[in-house]
Length: 494
View 1 (cartoon, rainbow, N blue to C red):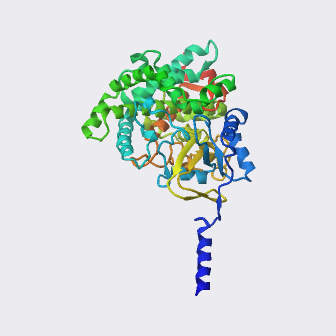
View 2 (cartoon, rainbow, N blue to C red):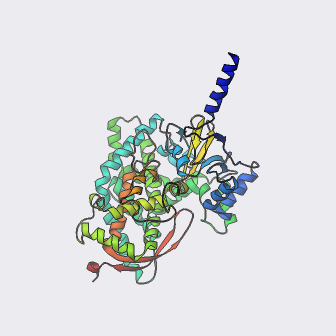
View 3 (tube, rainbow, N blue to C red):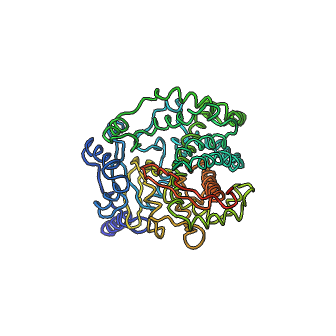
């Protein structure tokens, strides 16, 4: 009897050591090194000596090819007390970070540090709330309703803002190269605010300094994880990564931004008060500032330069195909609408592919809600409750076990065939591309609007121009794209 019980216990123990896919469950390899010194060295490797991609690949190689491993993540000392994370560096393990039942995302938006709440009027914005937090559902419900209600304004507002931008490109190109990023930064802020709320664009309401105020506020939040901003790099590391910059440096800028949004978003705030959401008008106002500037404007500032970069590198052959598709559906003189670009298979595929290769938000963080078994393609690992999980999204969305030619930009990847079904692995929005944002999940509430804007950008470009060329300078967050030549569409030439 005793022998049979003992045998049963051994068998039960053996079963518990196997993952759902039958892999033996192992401890996560890697490590965090010597306190203070190792996180500091790893920060220098990450930003300056190796770069993000090589930082992870070198540690994968050091640990026998494991794509789930323990590493330090910036900023490290003195901003972060604990830099250690469990990194998930393939598509299969990364999926854990998209499962709200398994990870808690309270205060994890920026990773191992949390910006001062003084930057947000003393409130914790929606992006820093876990999906299980009651306030999350109340605030996100308002934002989802806003995104849906304003979708019909996206195309006409984009046409106004980016029509003006391309007019500026045309006016400047005869005199020399024209940088896309600078024009995008200005016109995108007007588009974002007017697209979401209508009314007077910030460039008119606050003057030319509106964009500067927004960018300064973003920098105060993100400086601990920013790089290639200041030269030489040792000075940058000292100024940006060692100590927190005080919130009072942007107090007046943020007050001006808040005053603008209090007027621009008055109807949204009024409707929310009538609906008795349980969130005060002031808290919701600060959340709308965050949604408009951090989530929407900040995301577009990264996404569109990457999109234009890939279009520039693809060259005239792709340009001709895109121009033919765009002009067949929206000939010159007709209105480019969201529904029109939704009927353009190649345009849609190009935008999804850009979001796959260069997701606007490269990082995902979350704490394990309970002890977990995390599976990669080839192994299973034990993660304990409370441990910080980190995913470097470009390695997940460029996973060669999921996508063919995963590291290449393939314009027609999502038109048809076997990989059309792989849209679920395009997860830039903190969820699958074929999924939907809801009050109870962390998927981006403006997901459909972002995709629509990408399609509108492609359509605007190739109804207006036959082809273009641009120089591209790669930087850690986004490339600097500079137009060097543009060939106007035949019907547009004077």
